[in-house]
Length: 334
Image (tube, rainbow, N blue to C red; front, side):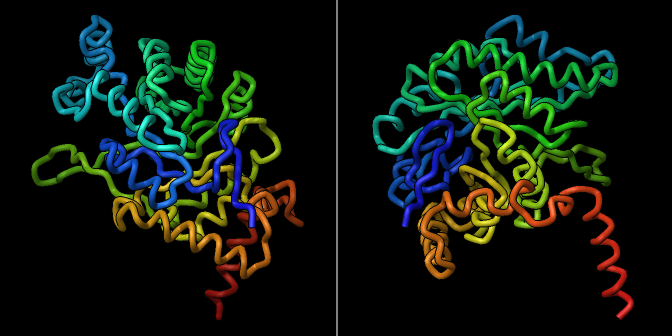
């Protein structure tokens, strides 16, 4: 049985990747991930705020828009709260790349290309096999158009791709008027992979203290549906690899993502909940299911449920919405 896949131009022994998380802040954990069967590891993110901390750009970044939103500064953590600065990050990346045989992918998180180009180069020099750009941008300024937002992503893609020779992935959100059009633009700009989708932090309120609550809920398996939709729609329409992330708790989610057309499937929440050794479980479950269902390779499965290959392509579009409502009314009537 051939579990190999190609992601970002890198041949992986299987499609299951350990994605960015606090677990990858320790080299020993990355070694344990390799031992547990991860085909690649994405490092925890280096934030743009960390890169700009000692520059005048940081002051501009932190104060921009505060005339309109008096409490805007409180939304950003103090730089001292970050667990790893740029130099420590590169040291961990360097040691991890030397300690394991699987690809180690660096991760940059921010909203501009200021400083990213230099640190993308630094990550390459530190031994990163690839870089994942997590463009975490919430356009709170209502005067910014959707076209401007998309152009920001495309410009970053072009600048970073021109600065390094290793592959670059772009982790996107689903909050675009046309996800497909942006995917096409990034593909044309040279993106080696598109990772669908980032989960934007969304605030909660403490109604008694009247404070914004900063917490992060782990993903749930039910959240894979939006990812399945867009991976299935993009499969065969872009040259870039497709990476799936969010909601992977068992081999079932892995298989669904592969059938939609993903080249690689990433998991974080399951590892935080069940431990690093759960990677072995995911791998073994995937292999067993493929044997039981007579699949000889991941390639045979990949994209088999994409829009291009299903019997009813309209099932991914508006017609399916009507069918779902009708089926619910029918079951309710019983």
